[in-house]
Length: 178
Image 1 (cartoon, rainbow, N blue to C red):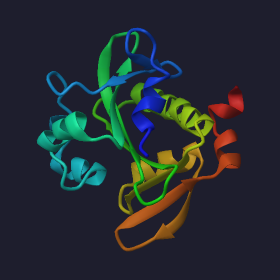
Image 2: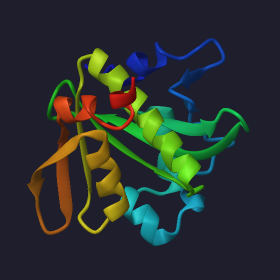
Image 3: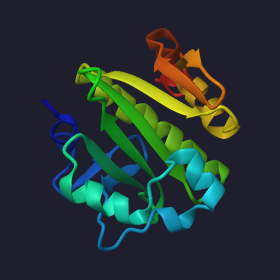
Image 4: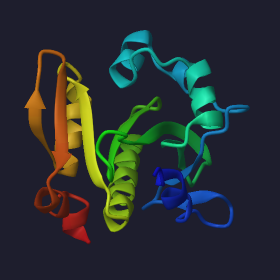
């Protein structure tokens, strides 16, 4: 039933990286990668509530419905963020994307935007439906999601739920230049 790991890894190069428009994504390594400690408690709660570093390490070992990727600047081989792609158990063929960056500057924001754009293209080519959610008060995530082409379809007191609008995605700042 789950295929997200195989689908994403089929796009890895021989060095084990996914080259995504000036960003390298590699598989999370629990022995060497620390993610949670790069974020303040409040920022981490905006990304994943109730998930700590120990749970991320377990996901990497036992989860078959998700893949955790580290984003690296290929010029400096420095990690600056991560994304997690999770297959939705309740909606076959759908994925949810979570992520964040700990090196916050214009360069890494643009790298993450370009990398997410490339990964979304891969997921679309693999016929996945892509959804996102973020806390209503997380304005940075909301702006990036809308810039990528996601539109809100549901909103409650805490969360904003978005689906990818293909036309808006194709017209976003990166795809509009290609």
